[in-house]
Amino acid sequence: MKKATVKIIEQSDKVGLYSICFDGSDLTEYEKFVKKFMNDATLNKDFQLVLRAINRIVANGALERYFRPEGKFKDNLAALSIDSKVLRLYCLRISDQILIVGNGGAKNTRTYEEDEELSGYVMDLQKFDKLLAQEMKNGKIRIEQNVITGIESASFEI
Image 1 (cartoon, rainbow, N blue to C red):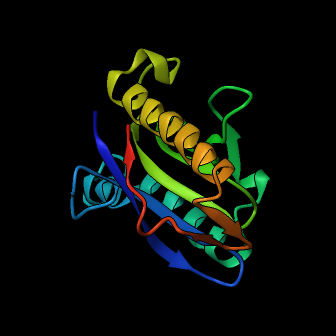
Image 2 (cartoon, rainbow, N blue to C red):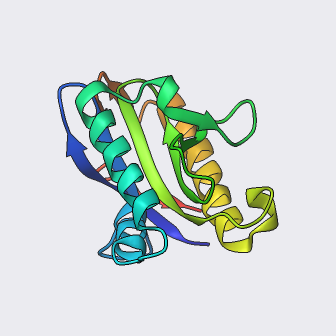
């Protein structure tokens, strides 16, 4: 079991960008992704595409066309849709105005399920997605346009 909390990464008129922190880590999953690929010469072009996509989302919202569905039909799991065959950043696209950015990596297998690291990121996000839906159903957490109220003080057992 891991303890997860959520931090806001960026807030614009169009979108609330959030990420998950595990077990009291100072870095969010998104920040770990950035740190991991910031100085990676081989994947730098792909990494720059990811950063541009995030900036586009902050400016325009988490519009469906920016993502590729990745998980099961009933969850919110998606990967940023960039022209990269290798680098994946997994997210929970809750709405056009709410995006929870996870972690990701280089996809060198046919599917993420075949890669232990990527599969782990995906499973964490899927578990979190279920817990978030439960908390929203219970009324403890609410989404109001581009803000998730009640999430800053919430803790999730994944």
